[in-house]
Image (cartoon, rainbow, N blue to C red):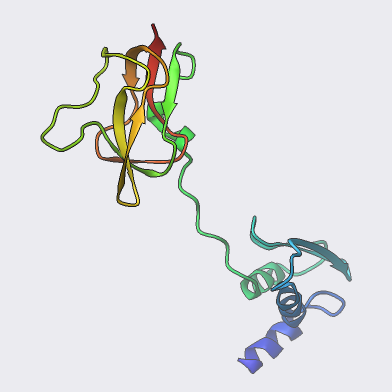
Length: 176
């Protein structure tokens, strides 16, 4: 390991950042509240941001291999986040009139109280304020989602037994 580190430090031209320099920077930031660091040395600039984006190395006159070596020494990039709920194709009814009923938390959407029961509501059902529309299961708790207004169910955005995210649209109700 020490041999590879010494070779990497020799591969970077003097005046710039070495793998050891970057390692020391990252270690010094661990346990601190510092979220961003920008440092320039010998024509190279290093930008470290924790908690948001992976480390970026910007060079002006450095060899192509320098960014690869430096970024490998620091924490790996965070896993790609799943597509936000707004990007789902079932949610393109922004222009349609009515009130959107959204999920108050992450869970599983159920249209009926049990698998062999009829759904609480269907498209076209007239609902009263406080009437149960569906259940969202979260952490093994069944949470009834109620209508916030009187009206007619115009659209159901989510299929039965489908995972939902916080704020994801479940129903569109056209007020009476």
